[in-house]
Image 1 (cartoon, one colour):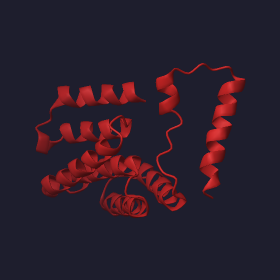
Image 2 (image 1 turned 90 degrees about the horizontal axis):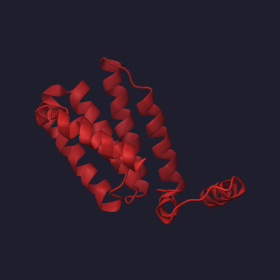
Image 3 (image 1 turned 30 degrees about the horizontal axis):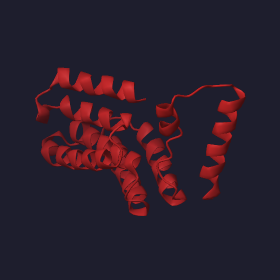
Image 4 (image 1 turned 180 degrees about the vertical axis):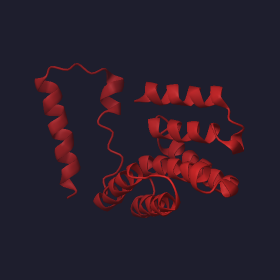
Length: 160
């Protein structure tokens, strides 16, 4: 399973070579961005992403988002330096704060900020961290700072 990541890198490089894509030095260092070499962390992360994408509204959504948070935490238990998992956990915390437990928003936003800081310390260029920050900025606890949230969304687009 650990060789899967190496195989993905090799295949990506071969495809780019055969398509005669010319990547700049910056693009070559950015792509492919393998966030973890731990297959267990990657498994929990992908399960968390899938679960998060299936969320809805109402009481069931709260339970589902809490399950998503648990999956991202398991990914980070397997690999504490998995920046992408920190960023997605931050987004799940922010979503939970805004849509599921608005009366506990300060607590959950604080958790989201902690995870964004961890993600930034590992990889400050993750678009996912910018998107989590945008959600936090455009929340009641941050005073609906639309201009700052839009800047974060633009930074996410630029980093993608």
